[in-house]
Length: 86
Image 1 (cartoon, rainbow, N blue to C red):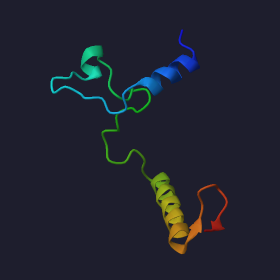
Image 2 (image 1 turned 30 degrees about the vertical axis):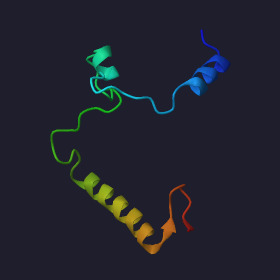
Image 3 (image 1 turned 180 degrees about the horizontal axis):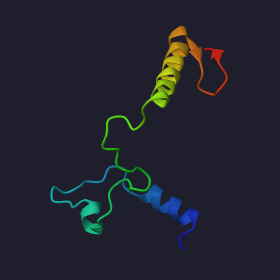
Image 4 (image 1 turned 60 degrees about the vertical axis):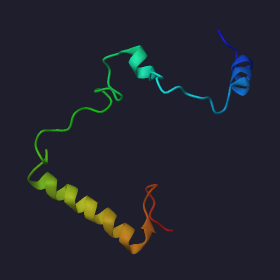
């Protein structure tokens, strides 16, 4: 196991701008896994339909979006749950 001090010494001794040859191979090609960059459990595929909700629930979503847009247009800040100026 490498200690923090050894890792720091290796990092400081490394070349800051190494010369990379033209035939260099990316690490992803060497590892050769079938996984994507973002796992499907973390970011699943989007739904096939345009909007997954309908009826009165769609109205509530549109209303909430309009309220937050109106707060921003007026110049108030609602980022932390408390509406304040600035």
